[in-house]
Length: 90
Image (cartoon, rainbow, N blue to C red; front, side):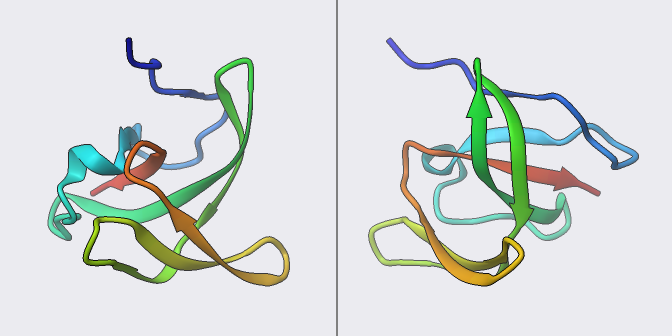
């Protein structure tokens, strides 16, 4: 049984984002489809309450996504295949 994707409480973009597992992306984020990638920092009752844009991100050979976020300090985060990311849609 899989966990349903979390929902967003607030979104400030023009188009609604997609929330997908990293595994579903297959180590590729098409730049013509998606504008930004966001790391989910905190959820409550399956709703995203805190998220940050990833910068300088890349995929590892085993499919994990590594990137920097400013939370407000810069930190490097690792997103595993079964974790969700928020994708801004162009």
